[in-house]
Length: 373
Ligand code: SAH
Image (cartoon, rainbow, N blue to C red; front, side):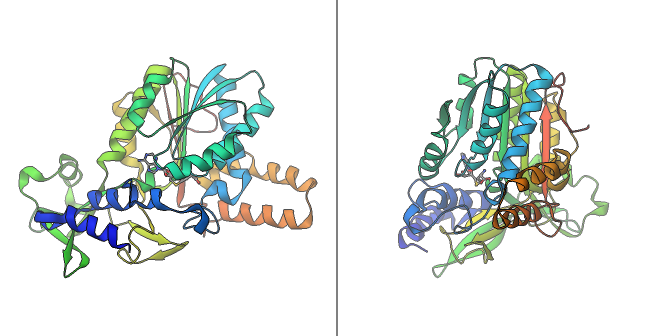
């Protein structure tokens, strides 16, 4: 770990002698000077991809982004959208957007599209600029999701994201059922070493969401960990407001589940799981997205939350099999092998097929392709 980052964290930990997980993750992932997403050096390797720290659906195969493109296309057709905002949250290297735009620009030449990208990292913004310059669409960048709403001109808005919500910082709370008390997971610094600890919470410090989740504790174990991200909740709420005001739909692809219980945070360094404190500032941290929490927020905003699909079912429903057959017709043996291996990684149960979920929510009048309530 870099000396500078260490000193910075030490100062942040300061007099309280600890940081909670969310604040710690905020620094090591997003700090402008030292955070993982801002420090990756293009010359020393890539953040995302085979040579980077983690690999994502769009980087594995063009099939992924193209089928999301077909989904967007059908959504526009179903609802007679002619002039849309297409927002991507956390576009990485811009590959997904590029594959989506290739489909849209080929299949519907009259569709007007304004692209909006939410990207925190200047390094990744430069990748995205490079990848998207071949298209003739206007692209606007934002660092702050709450600024998006001012640029949408009341046009139908389609929001997509892949592996975005899983990297937003979370907190962990522990519920001791037998004693009816809650603690918060914290990070301490002792003799220049970081370690996990817990802080007992006073009743008024326990988040309401934790109290609600443990109202009927019969099915919970004694020391149940609850993961909660205030940031995810506020982002989802903002997306709901955007859809309510402009019409449209949201598509999330992320690895996740439908409850907040259990510790799911993991650290990935150079495409391998690593120990939490081993590569601070150089590894990526993510956790499973709690789609139940998202559902509650969406329904609270009077939008329709559709049943989750696994990534496998989503891609099959979108016609991945016929797409791969078509692509194979004009491919060399080597290309065909690559297509097949990408296909396997995207849909097989052992890899991304089941743990990754696809979720759609939309305004009630919108006709959404393939999803059911
Ligand atoms: N969607 C891409 C990249 C996923 S990595 C893909 O599938 O390959 C997560 C992306 O989200 C990166 O581009 C990262 O810089 C961005 N990001 C993470 N947190 C963010 C935040 N709070 N605001 C804006 N961008 C963020």
